[in-house]
Image (cartoon, rainbow, N blue to C red; front, side):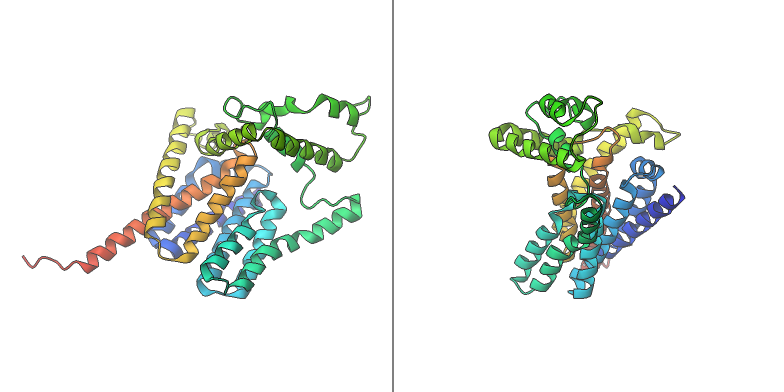
Length: 336
């Protein structure tokens, strides 16, 4: 827990430096202050889960990627790709990120940055290979990251899901298929196959459902996309000992959402550095992959999106301050 507290503090400082680099010192101060005081980022650092490590590696990846794009540096691009691979080892929901960033860089450079694109598209998955080889040696199964993805995908996407009425994974525990459960468990409730195979069966069922009921599947995707930003999981509010109330916590979440979206619009409009759009692309990737997942009541599966919203608040404000300062410097003072 002490190590996690240190990692959380480093993430806060690193995010501030990232924003300062992109939009000036005002942006850095704002990002550091919000991340240091926001209840979610306090709450998750107090539990032995992957969120704390994930956020730190994510900010580290963004920081290195920004420098790699600015300098068009192959070594920095390789380092960024390695960081993204480490992010995949924590959780696989950023899996499309390297490929999406590679395509965007190729399009922008008109193919000239193909070496950078290749590194971003390939290296993150190469980082997973030692873990894959270890799992093959120990379990004789090709487990790339973890063996739970298929079950999670089924719980997050199944014919009985109404994402508007039941937005959390805790509401979906009864969605497991009785026929599969009976077939794959013995009389004592133990699995008769490996958990990896069990999970693969549910993943296949999920895609079978998506093909059979595409409109229902897409409807839930759209609802879950908005749920990520509009649902308020009140578990992390206990991080504020003095202002521990659902009303205060809901207010701060709504405020961060509104200001984050305004900041995103301001940053996109006023930002002149191509590297800054890498953060926007990553935000879109996480928003998309989050739609095929589902929320948890403790806020674990949406905390990285709150990180991006905080970054956009800082980057948008810093960009506006820079723009106003530039206009003031260009307009001559009235001699009178």
